[in-house]
Image (tube, one colour):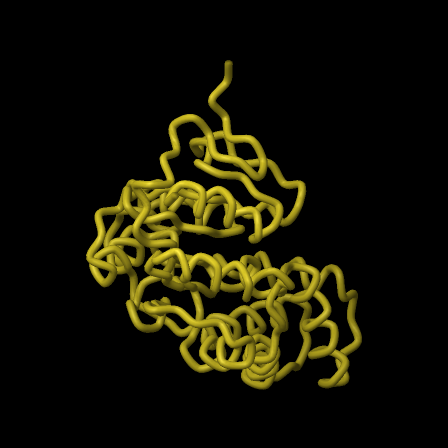
Length: 266
């Protein structure tokens, strides 16, 4: 019999009783803001700036320009490493930029590519406001509260700036004992430094931490790289990259964590 995880259940190798800390990604995992929402936001930004262009083409370029605008850009060029490469996972940490600055640079790349005169700073400001006001998934609050009542140490680990993430958490009434961000750690998922920083703060060994996230590369690949257990919240139909090991859990909804993890503590 295959030991690949079944959606909503654990695989045979996963022992919930060994987990002391449950750490969550933020956007796309707890907060309902995914790729179509970014597309909508970019459309609004262009409209507000009076820019007429092919929205889909601009958005595709904006997304694709992350590699040119992000902290890994120079390292990728030197080491020919794509997303999830060993260098991105384990190499020397590059210079750190805020998420806001990366967005600003992405818009700059996209504006230049299409010969448009846009305001990258204003565009990044709009995204910051949007992500500070985003709603959580309907089951996020109850799931977090149920796990806290079972005595788990709950943490949040996100590629995000402190300002908009803290605003979103306060608005959603989501409470965590530990909140770590790319800004506070000066590192970005999937690099091992950000996951090891979380383990250090939680005073746990990696195998005692379950990381819950929606991104195969940033969340699952990064957590697996340091030996964490993983729960993949599969928000769309994209398959898991073949280079990654199967996650310990595959779930469609956050609420599916409760019977698996709370049952493991009884």
